Length: 534
Image (cartoon, rainbow, N blue to C red; front, side, top):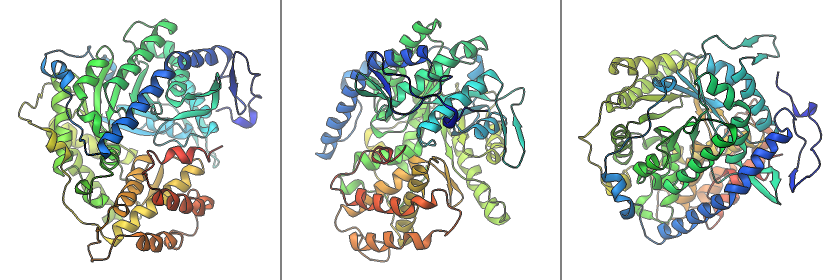
């Protein structure tokens, strides 16, 4: 069973300018683990902060009219022939991956689900309370050791099956701090904290079983950020006595700038990268954020922005072509639907949407895909099995794909309805309330929502309101009068009992109101929200 913080020890006294703001669990944060993370911070945090400053300067250029594009200075990398290092046998078949938070029961169910891979997520589907993060590390340590177990309040026992899915861990992105651990007066990087503790405790056991460690790297905006990860991981391998290239990574292409640097990202991580992933929800959010100042790039409501939209189809197919040319996997995106047990017709319609999406991905050349619920695994697997002759499609080079910058940038046409506007408000309020209450993965309207979809919702609201002249499909102005009306009615529209984060709804409403009225779009919803977490 996981060690809860109620059983944890007081924070150790500050030594060598390392301090903790809450009590620590010595199983996770013993002296050697603390020293390992602190060393990562001292070696690499300055570079991380410099790269975050580069993001700000780049966004200012986008706001002023510049558009993202392919880099002239790296043309030689794109035009030359090379491949990434060979992919380990344990990662050759990734047809179906399931994702979820580092909750103990979730980890067991996901590893037992029948998926080829489970991505344990410290990022978009975990609310980074100190208790969640520390218990998550304990849970992963027990999962790697094969000793993880869970007994529900009703007495049901959960144990690990003999042949679980391959474990991949997603640490937080470069933009997030871990405020509870400070080194030399500064908070450590959430990325370095999550990564450092996971590999420190589990690398030897995973290497011994030829299971990694394996990572998913989120929110990268370019190859310089990938190169920083490569340096961090190479240093960790040396310190932990691992052979170079033991730690393998998959990178999520979920920002608009990164889609123009996919070859360069693969090159920067070429000794350890095994694939790229279409992180499509964050990618849509990044498109909105990148073009926040551009009225001609405003997207229609979220429900109308599917993977058939030309700019998303171009993104997906370019990723496949780029990856397969370099010998890397091209992973498809998330199916967020969850089964609807009490409505067979609605459930079959939801499964039909999943089938169509996975059929599109498999036929396009993706090597695998993501699902959010175990009930979707057979549906998704069936569609990939119809197309794949083996464990992957690395031999499909998609040389027919020709994508230029404008293909990746042109906004699709569409409309904004009153229902779509209200849905964005309601999803953001409901998700934020749950996140503030410690839950990062929340079922809303039969979809498993995480931070990415909440980010789309609040970024769209901000952009629609900060460009004059936009109208709903019924002709009504999209303005702050409409926003105040919809926001003030939010609590009445929501279920009055049983919601995750029910007690934080009013706080969430007030927070969304303030963020929406701000003159600038806040970069990430989770940055101001994190200040409110324990």
